[in-house]
Length: 230
Image (tube, rainbow, N blue to C red; front, side, top):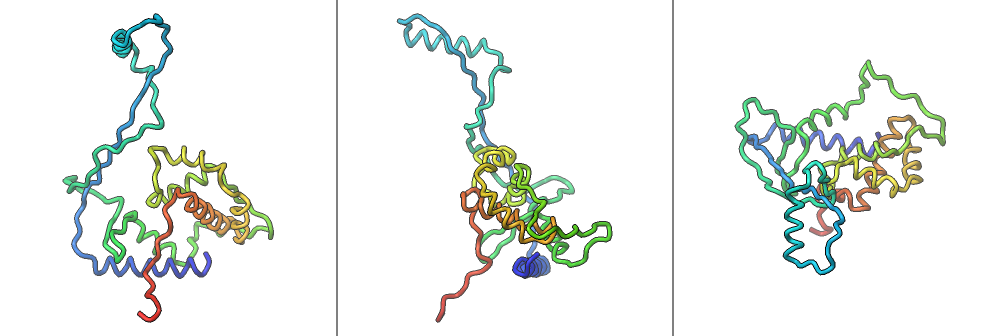
């Protein structure tokens, strides 16, 4: 972890601790999302050259009744927003997976365990059960940017994905993979001394490229810098 990342992590940890200590009363709500998809079926039918529109309508209606529903296939391009709402939960012993709180920039949303993960990540102690990765030879990298890696980057940045268009992260990763600049990813990985560092630097570069493509939303400033003289 470089100095900039470490400072940013420590700053985030302090903000989260301060928020937890001074947080107002909270409540749990259920965010319910739905989307409308469709299935479709197509066949080619030979009909009289002078068939009327009424007869074509009868043909369509008859085939709709006759065709086995199992022969319909999903339309991957059709995805419409359904009913999306947030309601007060009445589930007993509900455990939140996400948390939302107010900041100067509006509502901030993150995973509920992010505070614990951030605090743990900011420590310098290596768990006894985990040995540090051995250093790699200069100019070499064991890192490989696969489709699975791209999918993991999407998942770790799921809250800033601009629009999935109804596609799974796996499907998106397969489409994105061939569009990446692997030379830049390898150069970023080479900045690391071991596989863990190479993975962090390379994943950061993949995320940067995804932001350039518009797949991830741009990074938001941590604070507003006052203009000179103000």
